[in-house]
View 1 (cartoon, rainbow, N blue to C red):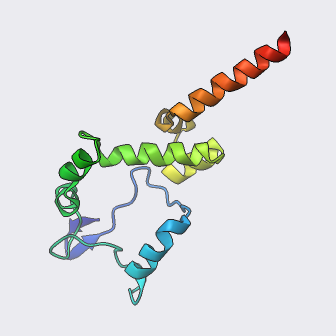
View 2 (cartoon, rainbow, N blue to C red; view 1 turned 180 degrees about the horizontal axis):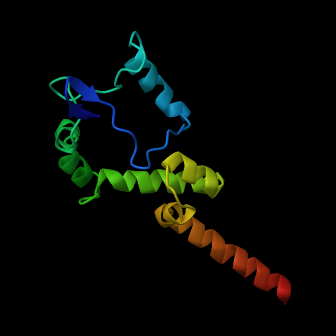
Length: 137
C-alpha cells in the first residue's frame, strides 16, 4: 500500500500479477482473529498510526534485531524467511512450478535460487548413495 492522492492506493505485487497463496493450518487462527468483523478489501494490518506498515515500523513493532539476536541468528533479514518458506514448500514435495506461483516469480530459475539444501537433505543423499553402493557390490 502506498500513500496517494485522496488516501491509500493498494500497491500491486512487484510482478503486477494477482496470485493466490495457500493458507497453512497454523496461520488460520491468527488470520481469523485479524479478519473477524473486518470489511472486505480492507488492509489486513495497519501501521502504528493507522497507515501503511513501513519496513522500519515492522522492524520496531517486532523488535526484530533483538529477537533474531536472542535466537542466535543475528543479521537474519525478514526476506530470508521468504527463502525459508520456499525451501519448506519444496521439501514438503510441492512442485517447483507451484512454489514459483506462490512466490510470484516470473521465472522458475528465480524460484530455484530461493531453495536451499538443509543438512537433513544432505545426510539423506549420503545415506541413499551408501545404499546404492552397497547394492552394487
